[in-house]
Length: 336
Image (tube, rainbow, N blue to C red):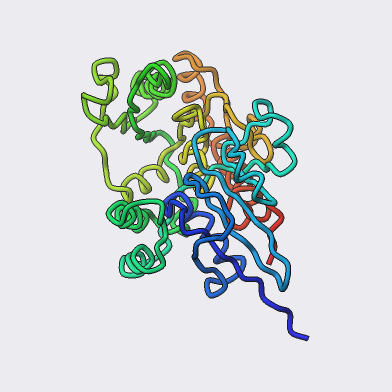
């Protein structure tokens, strides 16, 4: 008897940019022809999450993938689903009543799924992102088509002394205090690189404009934005990369991208959980958030290429086991 193929229905209220990574995994697991989009009856209307249902014959199983910056669980979606995956899971801060279904995932990032005509068709006719206006929906699928395809995230030969780092200078307010947090940590790394004679540094912080960013505090770190293709090439060439908790202390896209690229990652302490903790000296190099610690780590890695290569392999191995689109879905119990 022929085995009945599972069918996957994705809720159309997802943000296609943030959902694209997992849709890529669903395509890989079940085949594109078996994955479709429509409004899911009975599901709470919520943005900031990818919701989908897997049908196997008469059985169905409901999944939520939270890609928000917060570790907090959406209670109505938690009650609705069978499995709740989160890229910013934090079991120590989350009440135990939400632990049973909660699964920690690696940070993901946007990938290009479709051509521009296909993307517009999905936005207009399949109505992906129905929680948004038509204008915003088209803008989101356009942004998705500007992202690299997932297969572009492949390891490449690193330089011995060239270091590239480019990131956003986030706006600061009384709630997020980014100037004391992520902006300060990123600036410390940039300044450390610039002070080391062993390093040829390129990059900096990209301002969101004077009305939104504290440009005066970080004037020595500012840098113009560049195309994504150039960012990818220079990141691949960089001897090492820098990671730190991002907006609201979340796992940013960069951690996922760095692991996928198999980079030697220098990182301050992480704020949220991962499927399995990263290990200092094996797949990441953890440091304190001080200029001295950063300079010491950068200099050591530049002076010890064998250590760098070992961390690169460790990062890529970790990603292959826990972070790829398929591996992320398998953490949720999904198999072909």
